[in-house]
Image (tube, rainbow, N blue to C red; front, side, top):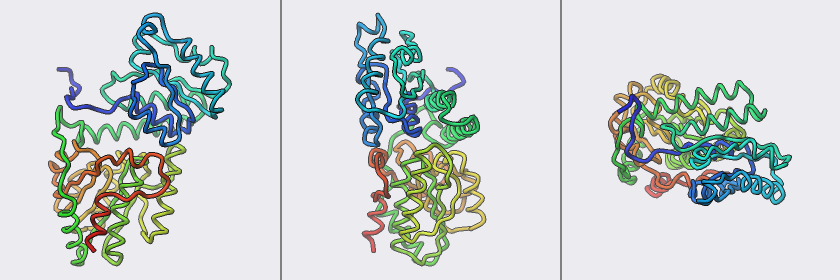
Length: 358
């Protein structure tokens, strides 16, 4: 065994991470240079979010003779058909193994659309390799500044650190779980809130997942508008173009729905936000905390002695959250697909249950 963790449960792909980052950079088209089935599910999901994902559909003979011509053909097709403002060519394991030169194909295609080449494959232990590779190419192309690249590297490393310490990367294998029954947890949350106990409701979500994770906070405010609850959300205006736009939309809707919330952190700072949120919890001194998104970013020393209601979208995050003392842990299944392509808050299962109990 090496010093690095050997995971035996599936982990996120660096190829998929590159695709999502291209979307956040407002690329209109991403071209996967590999077999047609590579990252199939996520490629389809991303098309729900407005980015066209094409593939060079490399076949076995091209594994041997090379796929530069198919890539040049797809680049020209994408430009002629979709007239994009930006494109990204994303590598795959096949492109890496046969030694494809993505940048050479972009130059050889004769296209004029600003296009970046992301040399990536799925053989990295951590999926942030796909994020960083995409951002480095974007920085070289002038799409983002060196300052933003440095910031993003820091945020990705902090997110990784949290996952290794208290998340789904903390053990070689974690049993998947659906968590606690939502109606049981909702009943206890309402009992505490209506008893006059002081509470805090925190959104610390990753990017577009906030569209649904924030609904638990809205629902709590809907059913107990005058309760002693402090609302805190990571909706500050920093990050890549799509991230900033999502934060602005959610914050505007929150205000329109009557939720006055403190801003702590941005939507791409979920991994680095734990200490700041923890210090705020210590200042408030609540009896209970509702934490949605990435609850495990908050170190347990800040939540010891507090009754925590945590909502995640990762079935393998349930056991680690219970291990750090979170009493009620719930999973919003299929949350991510339901938040792709949306532009307003999406009702969550837990939010719906809370509202049904009034």
